[in-house]
Image 1 (cartoon, rainbow, N blue to C red):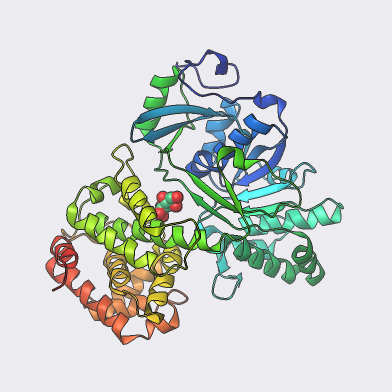
Image 2: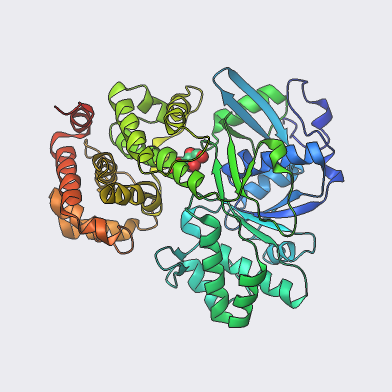
Length: 494
Ligand code: CS2
């Protein structure tokens, strides 16, 4: 059996492997992170590792997995250590990250999450649980009582299982014990992510005790943040390559592009690591950065996920290698950039070009099907918000209508060949029954999906020009097949 990565094997790793510039065991914990997926390991954990190496401090991370036990089983036997493979244009490098102390699998170890969250040394609670896990109705800025985790936690608030319920109960216990609250740092790709989670927590707390909700309002900080690093799901290739580079096996290895960005609102009353040592940028207002990243990077990502998946492109790099599709990405980026307020020091043309290069990185195997997941959670901030902006400002609506039509085509659940696939969307069943009622006509499909509750902004849903564009493009996709529809779309109009 191959030896596993761990504290004991650190010293014997090849010199080419970057190791923590500090003794991990000598540093205490200051952060609890909920949702230790590949993205957290490739992003915040790495910035924290850099901060620990450069300026020390007790800022290691205790991770919580809400559902999976696999990550705890991978990381705990490795003393929390894992490898990040950075795939740049000029090759690959390996770095062992030491910022995670241990993992808690909430499904198995039911008392441990609250114990970690109410430890006096926990000063920051960060989250990457994906858009759908919060259970916040974004239109109302309130909790969605029908969300399974919210419903369960409202019924048993002292034994919470969901992200929001857990944070509420932890804050309640901290208040009761007279412990200072932690700062809540949402690192999911949502607009005004700090404000959104604040609204959800305050609403949840208000249903238990209005005075407690007031206490959260007055004492808990929710800085917003923009996070960025393209992180494909790790595969057997990741593990095999890491084993080859390290000489030991690592069941928690991740891979990512070499680029990373983190823009954070600097509001941490209980202190924070010096993440700037890892390159993080602290600003007073994250909103313009967030809008740029969500509309340009994530918006074009979603567009190419649907268009690419449906036309047989497995990876984003395959989309970029096709001139027709690359042209559509370029158009999308330009239309999205035009919806943004100017941001000092940022040229959106340069940003678009950098994105084109990042998407085309031949070393990154990022599946279009991975990005296509959870469309109903992603479309509003990535595509529909800029589309509404374009509508108000006489901007170019067509690229957004194209992206929406591609998503609608994807919602039918069948490729041009007739082969079925799972949508992997929290509203998958609702979409399937809606479409079964609508039948096969493009107009009926578009109307039915546009009418899904809480998805499309009312003004967009009611706009004839918008609906006409979406329906025409969808009709072409359904009648002519995806390949021909893409060709037609990319051809410059006369
Ligand atoms: C992607 C993002 O899966 C997706 O929806 O658009 O995960 C994207 O790769 C990251 O936000 C990049 O920072």
